[in-house]
Image (cartoon, rainbow, N blue to C red; front, side):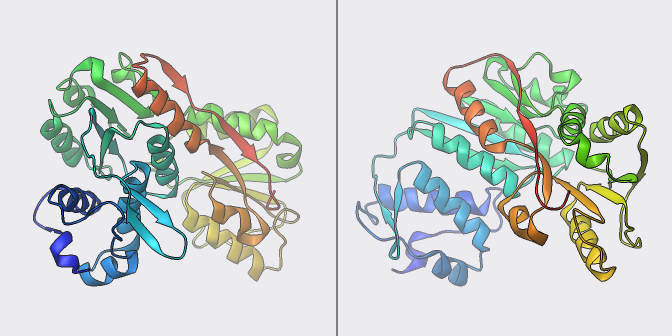
Length: 335
């Protein structure tokens, strides 16, 4: 297959590259270049010839598969399954950034949708100007708008440009957006509830330390941590990084960033301290990797797969409600 005949990736346009891959496949189907049963070029071939990251191509292929346009045959690759590409609805989905957790949410969301619904996904990367421009340029073009406002506190000035009955807020409960349906994390309560669920484990340490870098991270997590430590009279400290800090026996760390998580694992190993016995370690947002790192990392994590399912139900059934997404403590060797 000649990739350049199928895939058209233009660096100068504002369309995400993964979306350009999907559009290229759909265009090739409409033009009769790709037919049902035809094999699509491999992920490695597309990455190599078009200089794209594997994550970008995988995101595109996962959506093609979720929409029923392509299927996977183990050991052989991806094949065209559907050539009827008419959609009943177009959904605008604006995430803050792409990471493992958002990918789980997105995949779960797509899996619950009718394959006649098309989802365009964008990322603002915590840049308000990008956030504003994406929303403004999308106005009037979609059946539903899913907005992740992240840290922005003046979202209403932009969001009110959209039809109010078509807007859904995701991940954070913002005071200026209370008139819209929302699926949110209660970051402070989630931390407190998670620590209460593992109270006996946390209380065996002499000192609890939250490593909180600030910035894009929700400050409410600090409130939940302080509340637990105050109620149970545990010595507590809040620091921004562990880059120049050696961990000590009797300490337990609650970390936001995976970079600090790795630093603590390495520091403990260098000091011959055993995680879960001499030093405690808790992370946020569970992933498969945290199941195996250092024998297993304990996490306080919202259920991103459930968030995707709830979001799909809200969109499909036009629900105007506010739903707190479930979160829990997942105990592993590190605590």
